[in-house]
Length: 84
Image (cartoon, rainbow, N blue to C red):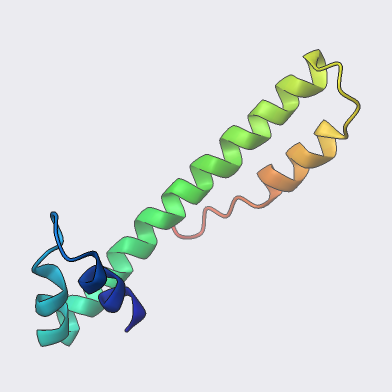
């Protein structure tokens, strides 16, 4: 799997032996992948929320002509809480 190859390529650091473990145990690899995706989903929600909030603040205070309200709707509309 590509994520195992990426970990192997990194070589050193906290994930040095992880790639070998993931290749040796498919169940561990599947669980590791699910755990990573869950964390990524949480950070994506935080990113959408913060950019949406930033855009609302910019709508009130920025002198730049831009459709901040629409951008905020786009970012906040991208939040899906199904996985949380």
